[in-house]
Length: 171
Image (cartoon, rainbow, N blue to C red; front, side, top):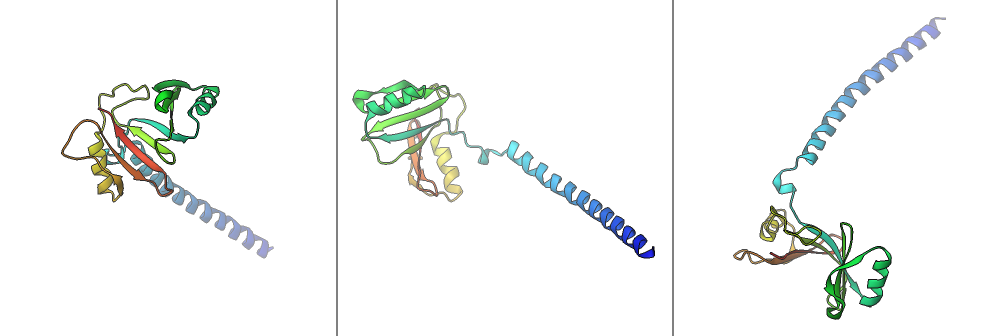
């Protein structure tokens, strides 16, 4: 009988200890999570670059075949001209550029100063400011904008998987 009482007391003590430890650990974990969420929801300017409209620029073999394919997905020609071997296709806020014979591979494209309708955004980060921030973080650029100029310019970089990123400012 004493053994059963001792076992019950030990089990109850273990449960209480575990519950108390769990509560303390949970509070600390929640505190850390809350701090991280606050940082993520309120990033400083250095963490919140305004890159503008996003599109994927695809190197296509046959622009007419690609145009038809993306039209069947609900895209419509938004800009460009088949005669010039490129079109910008749009479906709601999604943009896909199709380019025949203009570059190798596919490119992730950002347009500072533009929204997804090629409309001007009042407040945006100039490509030179973005360039400066990227360089300060040790990111290698494959092409750079002249920091002594203003207006249209572009920079390129490559992500860890070899994807080319173009940041192309038109104004």
